[in-house]
Image (cartoon, rainbow, N blue to C red; front, side, top):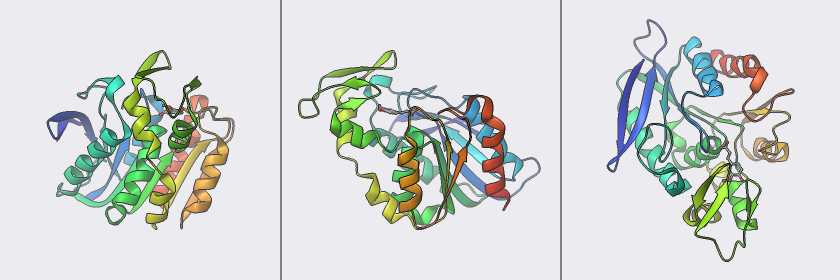
Length: 245
Ligand code: FER
């Protein structure tokens, strides 16, 4: 494992690169956590191991306001995350050992995967949105994020969510994002993995995403919640098999 920082316009992004044993040249997958998450969460480590065991190097990166990266949590927005992700893609494209590039992210990182998949469609062999929270922009327009209600036409300075708070700018940015446009732009293979009893991201959204993508496969993990809990083995198998085939 190599640990380092990737620069994004002066913001340091904490990163870890894990390569499969003995590989000289191999594919690389960029792997991104969710809202309030970090790169050491069990479901992320499970995804990383599944990829490494299938011969794929993994670049885990913590984005603005999360983990060991720069930025305050409350000041993160999806635009900042998109800008960070573009810097990470540019970094990954310059690595000599990389044959093919993939992008994978969990929840808000899955939403990011869908956005950046559309923006950089030529760069990815496939994208893997895990439990993708692509309802966030719609919810932001409706005035309800993570159970906190507000007037969507008069955005508050700050909104309490999950024992923390986000600035109004998070909402302002989210309201402008239209994920369908980026779904339409990405024509390559998509693997969506989702917990069948996820209470954070409704099943209807992942079913709709699987329908809208030109070439998507949806794997539902029976009995699994948003972070897969006791079902990490099935998460491992879904990802491992996708890369093995
Ligand atoms: C929301 C639903 C889900 C939301 C964020 C998420 C900020 C993200 C969840 C995750 O990344 O795990 O309403 O609002």
